[in-house]
Amino acid sequence: MTPETVVQIVRQTLMTAFWLAAPLLAIGFISGIVISLVQIATSMQDNAFSTIPRLVAFLIGLLLLLPWMLQKSMAYTAGLLGDLGRYAR
Image (tube, rainbow, N blue to C red; front, side, top):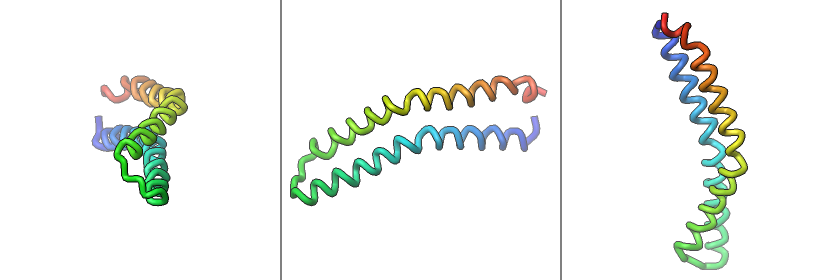
């Protein structure tokens, strides 16, 4: 296995991890901004008010994105294991 192949595998792994995490991170960022704006507008500084809606947004996002995330990770794994013979040389 050449160093270029290792760099390609690591790059592919990091890009797959990025694309799997990016939608949930965006959901968390947007829900955090919205909740903070609501807290500022209402002068409500309760920790439960900021935590529970963010967790609900994450859960809904995870449930909606899970089929896509599974398909993406299965495609990456199948591609990696499909080329295993080429990597073993």
